[in-house]
Length: 338
Ligand code: RBF
Image 1 (cartoon, rainbow, N blue to C red):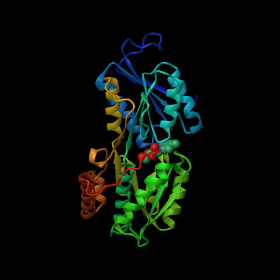
Image 2: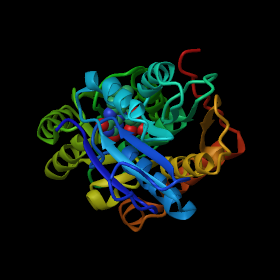
Image 3: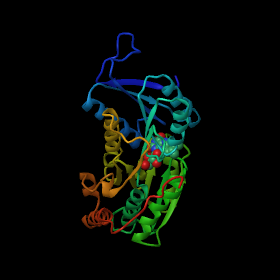
């Protein structure tokens, strides 16, 4: 089976299984990949479910599109054409284009696209995060760690980034922001950038991360979905540190995962789904949220963070967050397509 469908919600399906009670709001969540292992998708699904539960009279179906990206448009098109959804919620920078193609073909479907940007279509709303701020926070922290006296820090001043795949926001915003943040700590820091080539292969991710550590990286930021586990294993075995992205990953490897930059995709998903259910969404708008909106951050509260990281490093992260919040440091997110 190409797509895995599971249905939850506050409303019952009618006896036939294809009809819903009158007035029920129907949300389809299209996951471009799989939910398990990708923080960004886990948060999207959790946010929509929380909104549906709170509002009531709302049904949520989650459809996993899998890793063959060539099938995503067809998958979304068949969801939209089924007439079973009032709105489709999805997430990642490649989805606005697919939402646009499907919205042009199917006249009454609406889209909420998270982690993407598209303005001006009357049935599409997008929410993008300031990933330049997020990547800068991760890079600044990696810079602090690699130049610190933490037990696994080494003298090379080299840090790593492993990405699932290359895409414009990865290459032009996340990698650049990560390097920018690290070099704000020490301009001599270099970044070893590697690409896994998929969002699931933990074994290959472990091999790549092991090689990165062997070539001098003592801190690796992993943005690779299910591949993240391989980076944590390599760091654990080879005496290095891993950094998590999007949600708090400290419990994935206490003492190994020592930093997590955050995007509140769960809030964005909850808020936009709730607005859609209430008929209050501003269709056609594209918003960008950052540190000042409490939508991007760095988790300095987790007990494993406080255990692993010297207090002066934690204080430096707090100070950086405060500068971003107050606008003393401005890191503008380049708007895709502009
Ligand atoms: N991130 C994941 O964590 N898991 C994925 O399966 C995943 N698939 C992606 C597919 C495409 C085509 C693109 C452009 C990005 C993908 N991302 C994925 C990255 C995600 O959108 C986001 O950039 C990162 O999670 C960092 O916030």
